[in-house]
Amino acid sequence: VAVMGLVDFKTPIQLWKYSRADAIALTLTFVGVLVTGIESGILIGIGVTVAMLMWKMSRPHVAEVGRLGDSEHFRNVLRHEVRQADRVLAFRVDESLTFANAPFFESYVQEHISERPEIESVLLISSGINDVDATGIEVLATIREELELAGLGFYLSDVKGPVMDKL
Image (cartoon, rainbow, N blue to C red; front, side):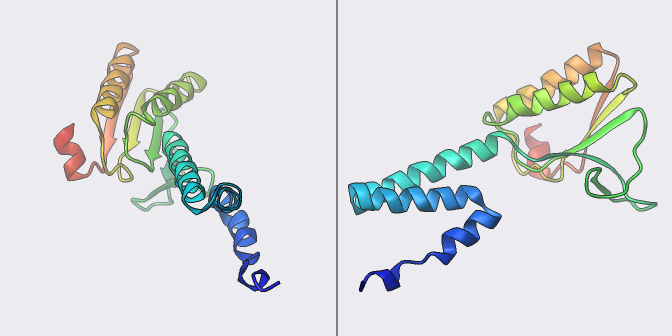
C-alpha cells in the first residue's frame, strides 16, 4: 500500500499516445526490474532502447516533396498542397545516411522510379542529412550510376558542408 503512491500510471499511458516505442521500453524496463532485479532490469531497458533506436534509424522518414505555391519551399506531398514537376522525383531524407539505412534508402528510390516511368530526373533534398558514412556514400554512388545508365539525372540540393566534404 505504501509503494502504490510511488507507481506512476499516467506516464505509460501518455507515452503510448505519442511514442509507443518509449512506452514499450519503459514497460519492459519496469517488468525487467521486478522480475530480474534493478541492475538486470536497467540493462534490459538499455538493450530495448538501443534496439528500438537502431530499428528507427534503419527506416528513416523519407518524404516525396513538391513546391509550396510560388515560394522556394518544398514540402511533403502527403501533408501540403504542392506542385510537382511531372518528370522529376523530388524527395527529402530526414536522417543521416549510414550502413543502417542505406539499403532502405536505395530500395525507396528504386521503387518510386519503377512506379513512375515518366521520371527523367531524381532530386535528393539533403537538408535533413547531417552525416554520411562509407556505406551511404557507396549507395549514393550506386544510385547515381544506375540512374545514369537508365538515362536519368541524379541531383543533390541543400547539402550541408560536412556532408559535402565527405562526398
